[in-house]
Length: 337
Image 1 (cartoon, rainbow, N blue to C red):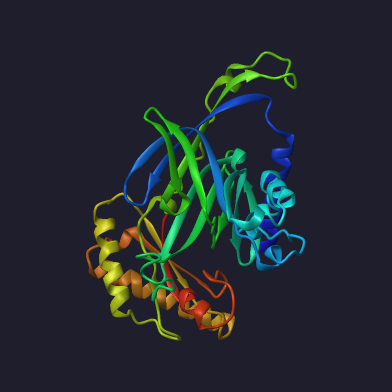
Image 2 (image 1 turned 90 degrees about the horizontal axis):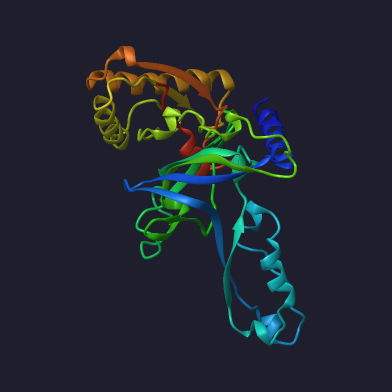
């Protein structure tokens, strides 16, 4: 049911983009990064940077074979500027790597293996969630920390598209400030909100613009879950006792909650796919309750906390094997208000 709804929403998003707007819009983006910086960008765009490396076949006299962009699996076929570069290159001109960038018009979110393309033109905000990968899969000279990213896109009509996985490769959010151009890697962004103001009418809209169409299109209300810094905790197989690392994580969550006394939290209990649905629902409830009890004992008012179990129904990392299961045995804290 959830997957069918997701696919239906994807179709609605595509239809909305095909209809288009009658008036041109000035777009600004409010950006918050994970390290606490904030930016206000005009003319924001998503730019994909790429490198085309010649293959040994091209240097041995064989016809060049186009190879996919690093983002091809997320953004579909390479955009026309890149495709033209690939098709027009001969073995002689391909002797050196070629670098460039091209614009993409949207973001692809994946949930339970189903990909949904969300056009930037229909997006009110995009919120990224990150969970550290332990142990890191990348060597320290590549990255000091390794994160897995999920995301929630809020559309201008108030609907939302959630993804349990997102990877935009070498994409940057580019925009202009009074001090000049700014390029922000997507991994550095915690949240970005878009504001659109109607500026003029087009031939497709001969009627005079109404006061409503001239007013700024307000972004959808911020999702409280998205702006929280509450971290998940993880469990051993078939267990609901809190591990030492889970307690350390919850201590950080307690500090965040005590600084925001107006917030209310739902603790979700999740399991991997092994076992029956009924058993996992009960195990998920015990995990959520263990987290709630710890928070209450640490001084968070019980009236602010509630629990729910999803069992195995909402895996954070789809797929079989311990490499996925260890991320799905978790308690997820959602700020509801």
